[in-house]
Amino acid sequence: MNKPKGWLNVLIVLAVVALVVFPLIIVKDSEFGGADGAAEEAITEVAPGYEPWFQPLMEPPGGETESLLFALQAALGAGVIGYAIGYYKARSTKRERSDEHSA
Image (tube, rainbow, N blue to C red; front, side, top):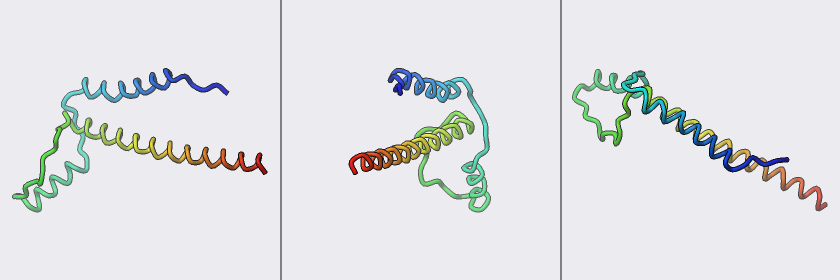
């Protein structure tokens, strides 16, 4: 069984990064109403004098960008969890096979 070359993995990662960064640079003033905006409106209705505890470090150019970053964070988290599950499953399978051959 052939293992994929390291450069192929690097190329795939660069392509994914380009797919994420390209829209951030090209699309300006994108709008998408999310849960944060709805919560802010609800708080303003209930308590008009409410002052937020802190300000964001970086303000994305639009709501779509914020959604994209959230989806990217979710995908990265799912990738890490999937990798860990696959790693431990393969390790368990390898251990079972080595136990069979030694017995």
